[in-house]
Figure: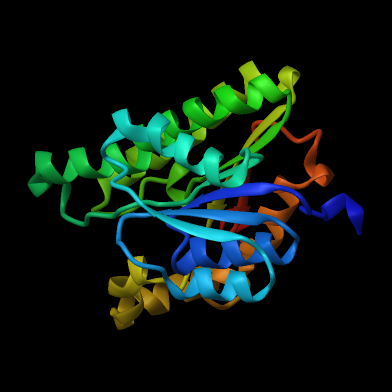
Length: 251
């Protein structure tokens, strides 16, 4: 279906080497996009090889997202290699767990820097390119904690609440100029970030009881919504935060 085709498009996916980002990057490539992966670690991840086997172009860029002043320079490198930027998926994030009474300033700062500040300034830098072209798709990965408070994750909840709100703010400014800005809020996903919850027998049981679908989400569960929000099929969707949570928020 041409409505969902990403042929000829270039997508940036942060944290695209594994987990949720890896699944979305591969899914966009399956739909026809060439992929620029931004990741902290150096080297070429398995995702790059898998995407290239599809016949799509894929490059990996090692970059510290806390260094927001260097974002314009990074984007120039990507544009030089790929020719342009049509899609941005801000997926990279970090988590720190601690009772709020013991939560350190260092942990607070790193979570807010990676999960919120870097996301905004990537949106800003890529948004300038998209606005000049009169089109583009930005997808910010939010969280169920954009709506709920969680336990022992005050910085993460604050960071993801902020992401949801500035996603709407950017959409208000840019929707009339051809740039769609939306968010995706994954539910409880079976990824490395949630290892502590998965291995905690009591918490795991409590979480599963609360999910109507009866299972943890898999990274591949985000592919459909990522392709949809990246494609022409979502041209009249702006400022939405779509939950992919097995029914958690509807219960």
